Every structure is written in C-alpha cells, then in structure tokens.
Length: 135
Image (cartoon, rainbow, N blue to C red; front, side):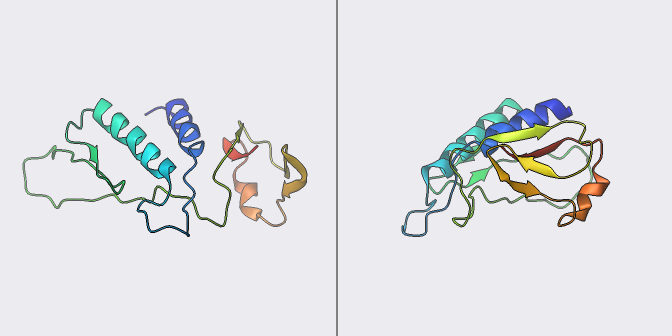
C-alpha cells in the first residue's frame, strides 16, 4: 500500500467518534465503534476477504488464505476500536505535517498547547517524516 492511501485511511479512522462510555452495559459502549468496524469490514471485503464480517458486539473477523503449501501456524491480529474515555474522541481534526522540519509543534486549535522537543526528544529522530497531530 502506498503511503498516501495509508494516510488517507488513517485520517478517516481517527475522525470516527469511538470514545468508550463507562456508564453503560452495552458492548461496544459507543455507536462509533460499530461504525469504525463497518468501515474496516468494507475495506477487508474490497481487498478480497469475502468472509469479513462484524458481529453485534463490534468484533471484526476475516481470514486470509495461506500462500504457501506447507503447514504454517494461523496468525490472529487483534486491535481495539475504542478511544479511552479519558481523552476526547469527537470532533477530531487531524493535522498532517509533511516533511517535519524539526522543532516544537504548536497546536493550531489551542496555541497555548505545544508538543515540545524538550519533553518529546524522539521528535529529533523524525525530521523529514510525515507526522499527524491534533488540529
């Protein structure tokens, strides 16, 4: 998959409001988790995984046939589709910083909020990369 297509998918995913709700017995606890799961099922089917599906609990399953003739172990990939209730999950406006030049990153939605290199020294290793932050 090329990087631009991957980035476009990621940006679609993060805009889905998937915040887990603590005050419910429903599973999944928010409708956005089911919405994101439906998106993933559609994309899996578009890639040729005909058995891709989602159950009433939001669990997405699909299988990929082996591409080798010898017996190989089955592999499962597992991921959560929810966002921690401690963080906002609605109204996400991702910001893409292409060819990151280095330095602190002020957040346009709240200029008082800054991702500082002093607090995140790993930023020094990301010069020239594409970064995605909050808008």
